Amino acid sequence: MAFLFYQTMGLFDFFKKKETAPEAQEALDKGLEKTKEGFFSKLTKAVAGKSTVDDDVLDNLEEVLVTSDVGVSTTLKIIDRIQERVAKDKYLSTTELNHLLRDEIQLLLAENNSNDFRNFEYGDHKPYVIMVVGVNGVGKTTTIGKLAHKLKKENLSVVLGAADTFRAAAVDQIKLWGERVGVRVVAQAMGSDPASVAFDTLQSAVANKEDVVIIDTAGRLHNKVGLMNELGKIKNVMQKIVPNAPHEILLVLDGSTGQNAFEQCKQFTEATDVNALAITKLDGTAKGGVVIGISDQFKIPVKYIGVGEKMDDLQLFDKKEFVNSLFK
Image (cartoon, rainbow, N blue to C red; front, side):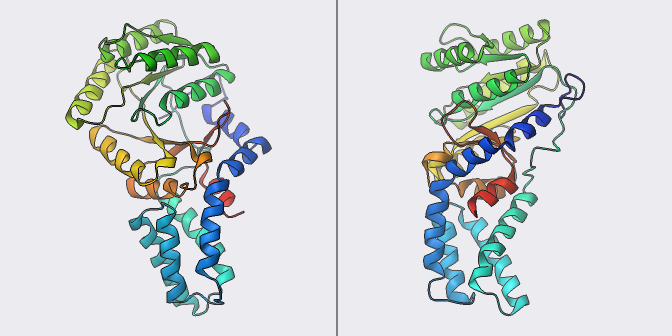
């Protein structure tokens, strides 16, 4: 999966440059503040009055992780690893627990295909096609707009396809983002066939030699078979124009919904071949642990996280920076 454009400037070179900027780090720290506060106040209580890590501390730690929305199976993995270390080191102080926990969470994310999107390869697809999926209300349109903004800032030509034709508001929102960011939007009348919108978008992107196509889709989950068929049809139609499209199926999840996000991830991964995740609204919630659990459970890389309202607050996910920010 690679995306070559303009000689040496890869898509992720540009992101790397921006993300490690102090203001991006500050936005990440601020966005994870509530998660951090909740997690550490619980952690402090879990080790209160203890100098070494014993079974009581591990039981308390298990509860801390589960109530921080890390998810049960991921929590058990982390506890098992810490237990192994306790058995090996014989004596582990509670002050060392923080470091150990941080290391284990980073290792876990590393095993889950969560790249740091620095050495991520995009091939020579032009246009590079991203199909965005997710239920209504998770911040799908905002994520599309912010992503378009980032790409546009790098002088890439972007076109948006308004294939969520079931809600008039969805088409209007995409058009609004198109105007704000200054990118082209392809839309049809409300109730049109979504696959037809996707077809038009790709056809015009190829004709205009545009770099990136981002397709919005309807977020209806009440009928999995219907969803599967609809997304399958959009994919098939797009492939008539760009053979391997979409190169990326990006599932947008609202981090503030905690366990509900797990359920949505399960539904969408069963309905289509999701290969990237965007987890939004982390700034308003203490449920940031969901990033760790979802990445572990579904083995799909978290690619973007939303840490604030600003246009630049959609960040590329860097597991090391994320975990370090939690443990600062």
